[in-house]
Length: 96
Image 1 (cartoon, rainbow, N blue to C red):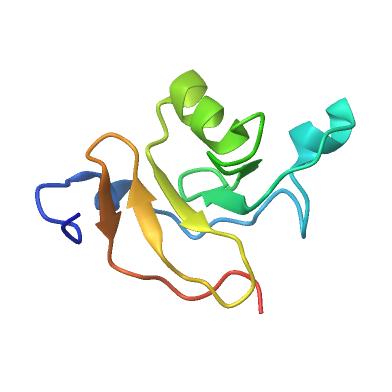
Image 2: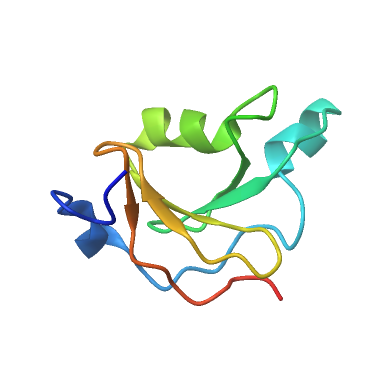
């Protein structure tokens, strides 16, 4: 997977305020668990990863068209574009 090559969606990235400090709000509302957390870099929606049963980060992308996410795991700062299936240049960690 190339890093950012062929992706124009990085321009959509905003300084966002995640809507949760350490949970997937949709999983909590359903009484479900998750594996890892991701943050939409367009609006700040926190969702669970593709390894989680509900895949809320990807569902958010399909519902809104917001294609760029960042890991919301402590110390991780990788970013990804769903549309182009590429990793984007890293950002500052969102959780420490």
